Amino acid sequence: MNKEQNPEIDLQHLEQKIDALVQVCQNLHEENQQLKSQQADLIQQRSALMDKTEKAKTRIESMISRLKLMEI
Image (tube, rainbow, N blue to C red; front, side, top):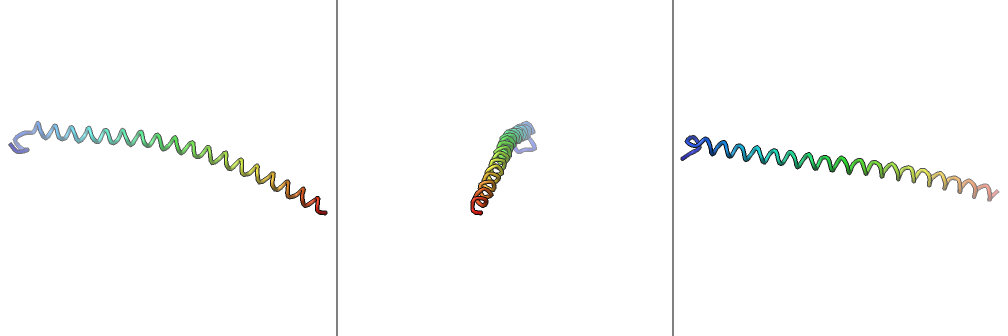
């Protein structure tokens, strides 16, 4: 029997392909959620590091100013 003679087999193949596509979509959605979560974490870490860097810069500039005053 060829495809024209057995539409039930064609329907089963189509159903399998649709199921596979649904699974791919679900996997991509889960991966996307994980990536969004990682991105949020990295943004938070970056902000904390930038704040820490700014505080260190301010402290260093203050120390340099005090050292310059001691030279005079």
